[in-house]
Image: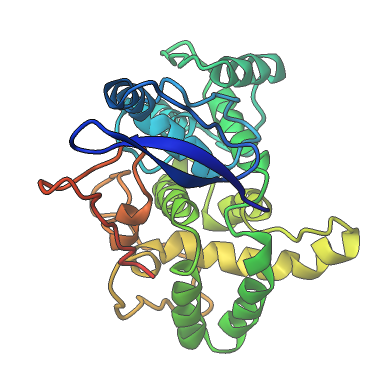
Length: 311
């Protein structure tokens, strides 16, 4: 994508006006103020997010949604995900067939349209748990690109093969691959896998063990760009293997520092139980590398620099 050059005016400390060249990409918005004071006011408004266009939630790029929603406070995952998970955790963890039994199609569509119009619909005791679970799956399914981007898909499949042949080495490779994901993807995948581990810990009641959850969520998180049946079937077994590990070993895989992965025997299907249910993503330096919308400056007036510690 090319850049266009514009001539703009800049006031110096004495109030004199001088010109400078400004580069802007096609499709961007370019504002010219009549004074430095007016420009400052505009910048304050922009930093509050009032000028950021809202184009919905479902089907939108994950990073754009996370950045847009930071106008409501710093958060790591989209509001719709956070709200669905909170409701299910409080009202539906013991629901039989959770994530497997479909919700009410009409209500799922109604909730989707509400979120896409900028509303924040509330869930109460009368809300159907399976409908909320279906809404969460729909959000993941409609992302323009899955949480594991298409460009990373083959690397993850190769890691799946390694998990079968040498699980210890495979888990270490999987951890490395996860930490190469885009920040927004990493944080949401961490959040989802931690929650699914909690869901499977109630499998004696909800009948959704780690294998069932991996079957349901795997295709929404890891999928080939080409949707031909051969590609899908060829990777299905490896996707299942990967998703099993992401759920039961999430604590070690997503940790900010390398640790000895709690390697269950290769034939074990039991997940690591959480000592205490919690849904906040595990501490990770990568969470801080997604830039805030607001422009922060240090006391000297120079823009503050941000470094991506997780790269």
